[in-house]
Image (tube, rainbow, N blue to C red; front, side, top):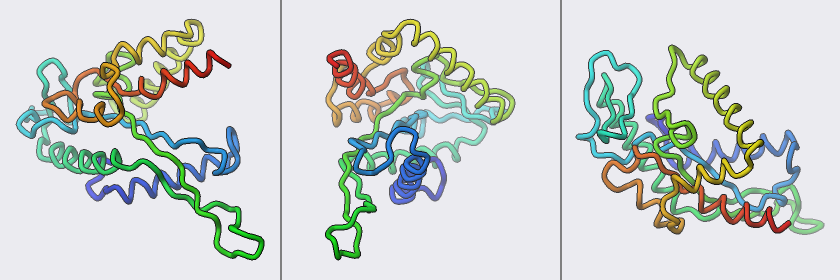
Length: 219
């Protein structure tokens, strides 16, 4: 979503490829018909803040997210402002979608040549300012290079997962602690669009997680 040429169509095409690639691996489900809902989780990275809150800072090559001041510091403010405009535009379109269409391998009838069209519910949830911010209170978990950063993120993610396995409610409690105050889906997306909220430590994933955990407890 941060690419300059990104739009809702390109994002949905990538999502389509990823869903089909996951199905090909066959680890969890094997058919499109087995999917109950497609859930996309995004980092907001402060994309809804006013342009005036993106400030120039010499030598700051990687955007620095400051939730206390409600600002992004960077040596390329115009680039970040363009990214914010692109990503926020894409998000606003995706939030309005409630379902995605796929072509099933199954046929409409015995003699039909066209595959059956499947309609699968779709929702987008967010971490603000990003997942590291919510789970680790590290909005700027950046190392010297991308590979080192990803390695460190994976390491810390695994450590949190291990703690959560030992303390099953740790994940739920963290999500609920930084939830958008139990808002409904559409309302929860109005929250980050206000002021500098998209830099604050919040998530609307509680809307999804709580009913799933309640179902799991019942079964």
